Length: 160
Image (cartoon, rainbow, N blue to C red; front, side, top):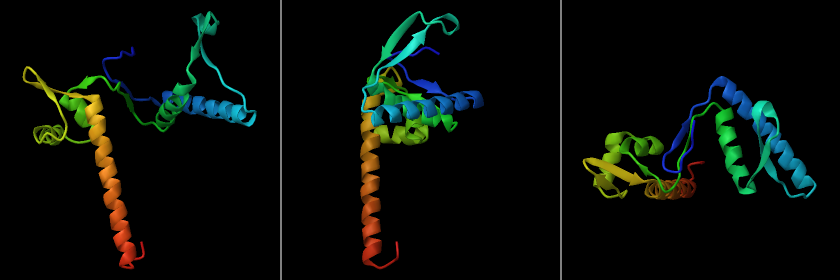
């Protein structure tokens, strides 16, 4: 599996992958907890070499650790994960999958100009940034409506 900056990467864990992810997550949590208790800065390294022999230690930026832990959490739970660079352009099928909607529904959103897209020949392309912006706006709107409903239920004494 090669990672590139121009495409999304899909990871569907096997049972063995899920177990390894859970083990790695437990280890990382333990290391982070000890470092916080001792108030010490952390430096993570990946050891690269044949059969585990240390040929070269490569530093891993600390900012990556929360993302890595989220990734491991999902994989440990057996959930598939897609890593999408924000500067990538997606097909309508990829965008629909990320929004968890049907492709025809997504096409309707594009035609209603709720999400910008561009045409490449006969095909639409959606910038990941635009898709994530739309998704965030929808989530914020949904949360706002739910809060209003909960407030109305309280005012009406509905016991929620």
